[in-house]
Image (cartoon, rainbow, N blue to C red):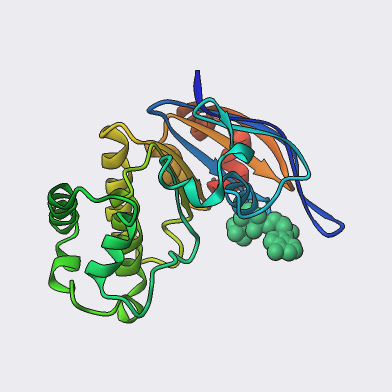
Length: 236
Ligand code: ATP
């Protein structure tokens, strides 16, 4: 059974249909990417998956349950965790406080401490800045905080919205390595990216979204090699 099963999802903002009836599924343990140009509807799709936007039509089943039956405040506790575009760190809290926010629903203090230390091992820069206010960090450091915070939530399905946006190539590389590592630990991941090449290179499967529709899907390797994807997204 898929961990996430989306059928005929339609989302409108007023009169504008941003998502026009998409189907997608993600199996347990998969790393799946959703690529597409600006305005294709990728962010809207993610927001709908976590209940921030109500669909006009269609069904979303997560871990065997329609998401409409899960109160929005319970999504994280159920393992459905998103790292939003723009990172969404709490600017007036310190790095460490931000990481703790990810574990807000937990009370296994010893495990939380170990996991925070593990995040510091992955991102030594955050360790150096643990008492710095997150709002004063660079974009790359904020992305590290956002991903660390998500890890503290113990996600089953992690939704990442353009983690590479606005970051220097060397930081992007590091972020993608961490995405791969989280995936290898067994977390199922849906990665939304404009950086199609890097995203497809680390993913098992991919979906291509154009103007609110899924126009192609398949194993990431096949998409990388396809003429259509190369022309439209890889500039080759
Ligand atoms: P990008 O890569 O630029 O973030 P995207 O694929 O994530 O693009 P969306 O942000 O989902 O695309 O936007 C899809 C369409 O919906 C766009 O035409 C956008 O202008 C529109 N849209 C998004 N959010 C809203 C909103 N809150 N109100 C009205 N229209 C919106």
